[in-house]
Image (cartoon, rainbow, N blue to C red; front, side):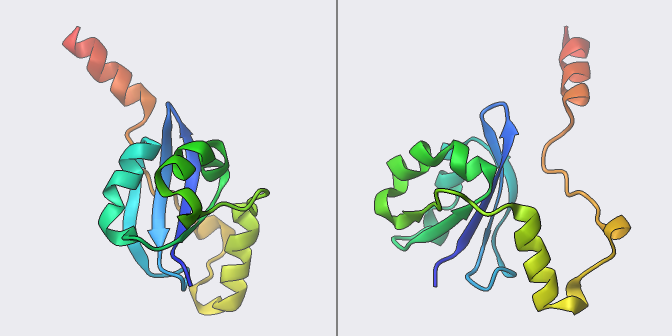
Length: 124
């Protein structure tokens, strides 16, 4: 089985990405907010020469960049499954890990635009 690379389009030419083991639970590369090339660079050692399955809208958007680097080692479904559905399947498979919708909290891996703009203006 291949590791699972989840890429969500973060705009600004970046992806929010995490690499999971084939079990879909064990994190092989922690969440990041980088360009597609920087993400793949950061994962070089973890991916090695094996295959990886990519999911998410970022994987579809940046499929050419992924394939340029990984060629046929990248498995990118033409119609990547919606992440919400995949999350629901994971929750159903392990109900002990599931939480109520109001208990879901975001994991911010990039500072908000407003903070970056404020910092840039302060340096003026």
